[in-house]
Image (cartoon, rainbow, N blue to C red; front, side, top):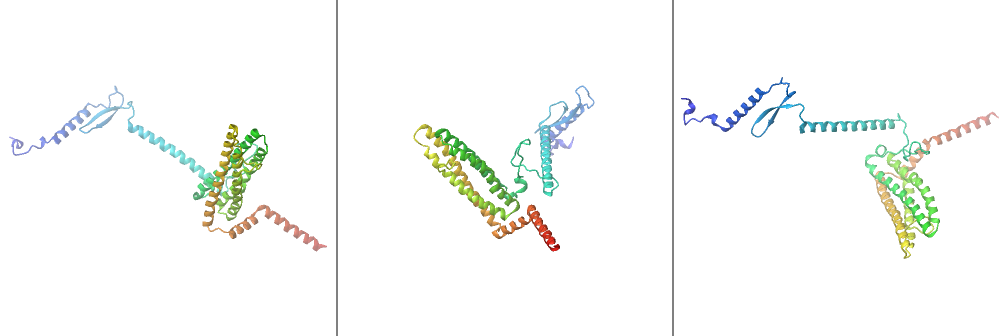
Length: 328
């Protein structure tokens, strides 16, 4: 008689957990005994353990079987890492090129205006907000550039408005002046107030800030005048637009079209006022002054290559004339 036959002694093998573990062990052993790694009938196999809530079963897995979700996710992750690595390599190459440009090892090629390579006119300026403008001012300078682009678009619309007036009333004055103003003001506005602002933020130049404020103030006054649109001024403003509402259907349509152009001029004037206020507040916060601008102007004036050559020629001429006079 064994000790477990005693009713007062508990049998440990009667525990359900022990019996479950025994069945699992037996199942695994039977699966291992049935597995033949040298069996070539089913191809090459691998062992796969499918674990469930109750038992773990060892099953053969063929290499020809479709990939599981885990292998697919690993493949996607690898492709994503490769794509990111290529992107990082491109950025590193771009940063290296920009660093060499700043050091003067690579000549800096002009990229604005963005014209085709085989075009008769080549780019005149170099413009790169991410490279030349400090990060804290890049958004502001870009907004100023968008303001210039919107103003240029408004001048083109003003030409269309002059053409509408030409076809509607036969007056060519507005169209001719609008065409002349667009050809003149588009490059002049970029050179006279956007480039000074760009160089001011790029070099922290008080002199360029002063030039920008001086020119941009008159630009703002001009856009207000353009939005008003007096007769025979070449601008399709509110006055010209309202005067076209004669009660006829064609007059109302022409008036509405010209009214859209007038609103574009008004939006440009409002944007100019807002941009000038923001830039002026930044300029005052940097501690810049008129004395600093004058000092920068004098320094840049003396550093100018043409000025140096002219001064050197003048000095050489004076010395030669004095030597010749002393001989006689």
